[in-house]
Structure formats: C-alpha cells, structure tokens
Image (cartoon, rainbow, N blue to C red; front, side):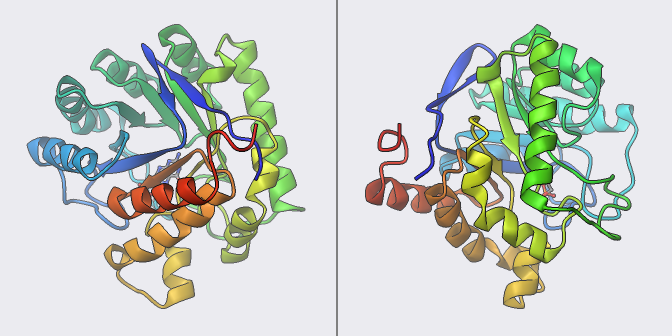
Length: 282
Ligand code: PMM
C-alpha cells in the first residue's frame, strides 16, 4: 500500500489518521440532505454522527451541488455559526465547509478547528485565516464553479492535472505560512468531473497518495454512485458509500467524508484488520 501520513495537525491539537468525517449540511438545497437540518436539529444530527463513529463533523451552509447558486456571506453565517458553536461546545471536532474567508474566520472563532475549502484555498485571505489560526485545512480540487462545473469537464490526464493543481496550491499555502502538517488534499469527486473522471481518480488514488500528504475523499451518496447502481434516491446510496470507503482506505485515503459514518467506520475497521493502514506502510 502507498504511504500514509500518520497525523493531521489541526487547531489546538492533532488527529490520528485514518478517520471518518461526518457531514452536516445546513442548507435548504444540498442534493441528498438539503433542508433537513437547521439550528438545534443540525446540532443534534452532528452529535448523532459522532455517536455513530464520526471523528469530525463538517458543517456547511452553502450547497455546492452541480448547478447551485452562491449564497451571500450573511446568510451563510446565519446558517452555520450557531451549529458550529453548539457542536464545538459539546466537544466535537468541527470543520467548517466554506469558500469564504469571513465565514471560516467566524466559524474558527466559534470553535471550529479545521477549514474545508472546496475553493482549493485560492484566495490569499483564506490562506491568511488558516495560517493565523493554525487550523487544519482541506484543499479540494474543483474545475470551474458549482453553477457550471458539470457542463463539460475536460482534462488531459485527470490524475496528473489534479496532482499538479494540488501541488501548486500546497506551495502557495506553505509560502503564506501554513504548516505542511495541517494540510489534507482532496481530488474533489464530482466537482467538474464526468463519471469516468471520478472512477479514474478512485482507481489511481495511490498516485495522489504519492503527493505525500493525507487525502480526503468525498464520494458519499454522489451522483456517479446512483448512475452506476441505478439508485435514484441519494439517501439509498449509503451501502455503496460504505463499500467504496473500504476501497478508498485500502488505497491509502486518510479521511472519508460521509453522510452515514457507521458503514464507513466498519469499512475502516475491516481494512485496518486486513492491512495495517497506519503502521504497515512507512
Ligand atoms: N463534497 C461536497 C461538499 N463539500 N468537501 C470536500 N472536501 N470534499 C467533497 O467531496 C465535498 C465537500 C458536496 O457533497 P454534499 O452536498 O453531500 O456535502
């Protein structure tokens, strides 16, 4: 198996890898769970995810599903801040899923310890927020923007192109004062990618592991699973997600981002028993 990095430095601490990140979307329009959680219900749901085995809860207030329109900063803040505060004060490790430096900063002040930026840390101000706070950070690849990204995605070589993109963003992050051990990379499954692109990224995941930083993969309930398996309803894609998590961990993923942590935790436990994910590959 490809080498894994054993720990992820986050604000005020460190997390052992591999691990499972649970998803709390506080949005009216996310593709699989939009409109289900707000306020107290979102906090309760986040705590349930932890109970079910999530090591981190990822709180997001802007849908990034294909075709989604951006939300303004004020609305995004209103959606997420109370939820971040509620979860963090209950002891959860919280990450904030946002492309906006203002939202990331406020969420960190409210107790979040990780910034999950699907915008790939493109904005210098976002890099400053991460550097100054000492937060952990997920740098994700997206081709285009959510509104248009699925219209005509194209790459010379999807794995090579994304590796180059991520390596560039890592260099900018480090140049702006972000500690290398705080960074986790994400190929951005479904973000400006065809079904074939997604499958190739999963098949060739060990090449991305070769970048030398932990990888997060977010495939949970995504459309390509529905297309492959003929499952229209996203909430019925959790079994496929768990099966895929086993494959991802076996190929060296450090974090999976999922709606239903229980299945992925079982996947992780099995993979750990069969191949030593943490120790056997130094
Ligand atoms: N996918 C979504 C949102 N945020 N963040 C990261 N790092 N990686 C992802 O793949 C990702 C993400 C969209 O899925 P959702 O609507 O189920 O949250």
